[in-house]
Image (cartoon, rainbow, N blue to C red; front, side, top):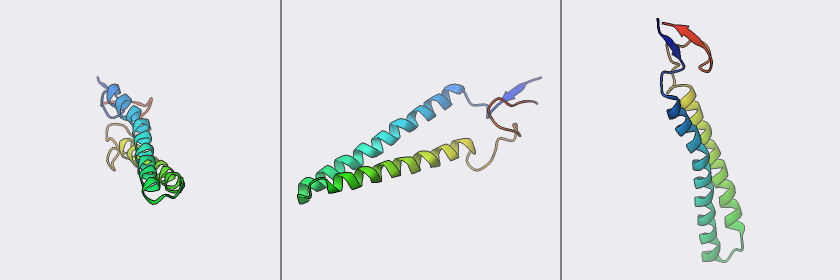
Length: 94
């Protein structure tokens, strides 16, 4: 008798994937911030582009993170066939 928990992937896989999500949000934000600073220096517009691009980076990072979480939890559009209920804490005998 085998007990199946979740999708069968290692817990370290999920730790690595979920911990990288915060890093990606920061990267999106800072890349857009630096692009805004470059545009502000080039056009002499104060901090207008920096503010707009920082907000755009935050939105882009949040959207990417949300899409990634959906992809992880839905297992690429289909639920794991071994587990019928929620993936966390549900046990099902094989």
